Amino acid sequence: MNNLSDRLNRLTESATLAMTRKSRELQAEGVDVINLSIGEPDFDTPEVVKAAAIQAIKDNITHYPPVPGFPELRSAISAKLKRDNNLDYSPEQIVVSTGAKQSIANVVLSLVNPGDEVLLPSPYWVSYIELVKMAEGIPVMLSASIENNFKVTAKELDGAITDKTKLIIYSSPCNPSGSAYSEAELKSIADVVASHEELYVIADEIYEHIIFEGTHTSLASFDNVKDRVITVNGVSKGFAMTGWRIGYIGAPDWIVKACIKIQGQFTSGASTISQKAAEAAMKMDKESTVAMRDIFLSRRNLLLDLMKDIPGITTNVPEGAFYVFPNISSYLGKKNGEETIESASDLCMYLLNEAHVALVTGEAFGEPDYMRISYACSEDTIRESIKRITSALAKLN
Image (cartoon, rainbow, N blue to C red; front, side, top):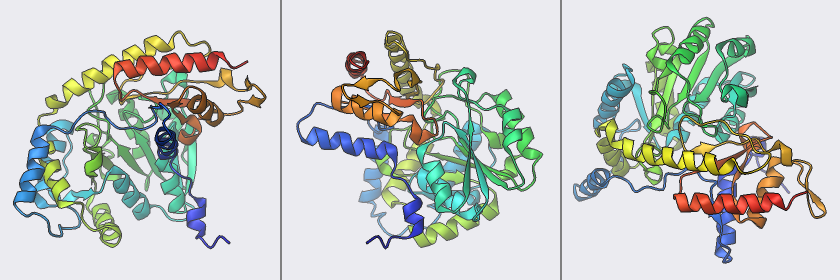
């Protein structure tokens, strides 16, 4: 008997977490699995950040914090957004949450009514569509082609907006494609958004420090849309702090109040120790993240070079983050003995079982002819994984 709520039955398990779980199960059985499915920097948290957390423990900062975060952290985030992103959010316009995922959930639940359309340029991060479904909104996918580097144009966006469209959610740099919108591209998008009253945008900027070409631009930096953009960020990717679980938003006052109201009932404030660690991260010069970014760039170049030798695989050149999102459609319909590879999910499971490399199906990101490869690992691991993948794909016919 299934007495679960319809709300829960509508949701799909996170594909990235599901593949990570499956790879760990195989590893527990003694299988040598290379896990390229999870989006987590393989670096250690900076020493200054860890020292701030240790000091917080020594200072007994272990009691309930304010729901939206400590004033000192909100002030540090406000200053960071002004310094690095040219964004004017006061400390009172910041809400700190247990990760950027909760930040996005708070906003979606605050804005979306049943039947509201939410536009998702695809490929999109796996949780966007599930959060929209949880809010009983209607996800509307707008596919961006690999020929345009997985970026939708302002004209395409304008054509997809209807009188029911309430919200747009996008990330730049993008998970899973690594594509990053330029200032000129975002200016055109801002002009489209400005022309549609009652339309809001969640700008997910969690990968802002990992951008290889040009500089990061925030959509909320354009005056004509700043009151209708919710900027989402956090410390997990740029500062290698995934386990600390700190994300935040900068937003108009009324949205901030709504998110505080929701968060007050769900989780209350984020971990006090993590908040003090995040405060130290916010005060770090953004140049401190350059070394990690350069290592990711070297890995990207290596991975793309190695993938050139895999027949039937096409990729874009990611401008940021730490993923490659290749088109694998030429392998659909091929057989592994008696079994036919009918989808990217089938191919990912085949590669997990045959090559012992864990990847994520593009279906989870709205693009069924693709799969995501994370290069948040050593160059030796990249070489070995591509060697295994190439060998396994060659066995299909």
